[in-house]
Length: 149
Image (tube, rainbow, N blue to C red; front, side, top):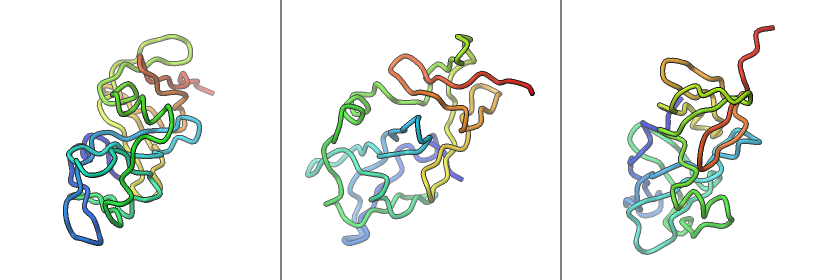
């Protein structure tokens, strides 16, 4: 497991050149699939600022590995453009449930580094399971209200 807070600012390394091509700034999450779809890269002046999750070969404790800097690109759609502007950043964003109750702020997001699947959202002292994620917007992260069966 890895987390957004841990991955923030770790180097993105090119497997082809063994050089740093940037560092992780933010992850872009598709709330429908509850998976990371791309990452925003900071510190690269030659190429774009996004990399597709499918082009990330490994997420480790000390670095993210991509094949080469050729996989870095500009934002490919409106969601990535909004993410690049900082609108869809999950960390430190308020969390609302689908009943309208505020749960707190996102402290961290835990994900599977092999698949990009969101496993949990840490909201204050509460852990919200990843399968409760409903949406990520500019105002809030929306999760399904906890329902005791």
